[in-house]
Length: 475
Image (cartoon, rainbow, N blue to C red; front, side):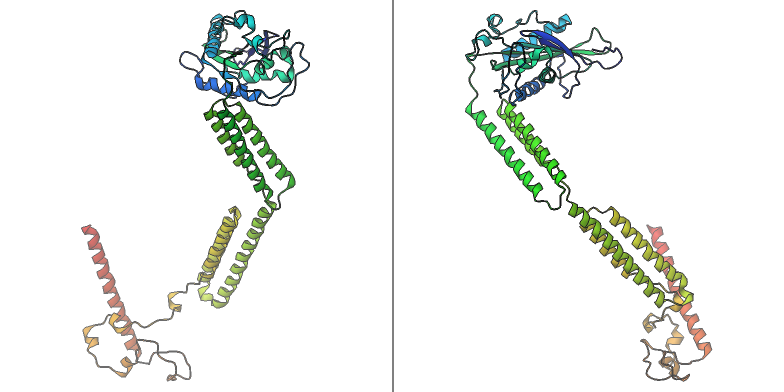
């Protein structure tokens, strides 16, 4: 084990060789447990590690046949029950080891709930399934780590792969002769490493002949939970298989994720030792299965891209057509500036629409942007200058006039001033043109009329401005 006084140190010491043993390994903690103000692991964290142990026991394992003294057939095992007395035993040992600053099996049965445990290997020799003359793994596993807590259950379990200590700690975890368990861990300030903590963890197992067998209620709950998990997994797989044009490899990969999530959930259900824990494992499993993403459909992706390209082209075609129409209708060079503004406006609408479409992720957004752009392009017009706009005569009631003018008799020239467009059916004096013209009334009269109108409008505008300004002041 490499030591460093300036970096994080994680070390694990494992106890138990044959009956007792020790080993050293390094492991990083995945779950961060909690400790109270006395440095004792909380009940919630203790339960986490007991459930982790029972999950291992509930899994069908690879048989261990090459151990010198103890074999394991790899069959699934019932969960170990936690009892208060077993937890007290484990805590007594953890506090003892922390006070000594080292781990040792010299005083294994200190705090044991039954004084006979020392002679009966925690009563496991009295299990009806015990074969006389064979070794029994246990009853104690020890772990020590510094700097950061290291999961002892996983580190003990890792021996099934590397065979350290003749599988001793792993075989204690899966001992078929035990039916009760206790676990405790304490945290203390390190005496060896600066600015660090040390953790002492203890697992003890035993056999209690008076322990009631698992109730039918929990068995029924487990079966029901597993059925719900199976149903959820089948529905999720069926949902994936209905997708069209999905790559076969992607589909298989997604279905494998469903299978893995199902197996993990069932493992958690099997390791749960209470109604609440079973329900929690079931709910977590269902959530995990439904949370797996479906494989992407190539057809969907292709449809979106094809629709995007068609929509962009349709907008460009509509813009080109509209621009040509505007150019033909406004060929007069005197209105070139306004035409250019209209054409630029169309280009801006097209560019904005294309930008929105390129970022769209569904067909609805693409179609909505296309419809909006086409509508805007069609509504674009060339705004003509004032002198080019046709003059629509206003009703006499709106024309500002002087009293002297209103009193004048209706002369022929004044009668010819229309309140609505004059019908072009009669030719004017200037020729056969059908264009609408005003009767000739004399140049001086026209000038006087414009001056009169201008003065009237000036008075109206001025009065409005003064009134508006007066209202603002009041406010």
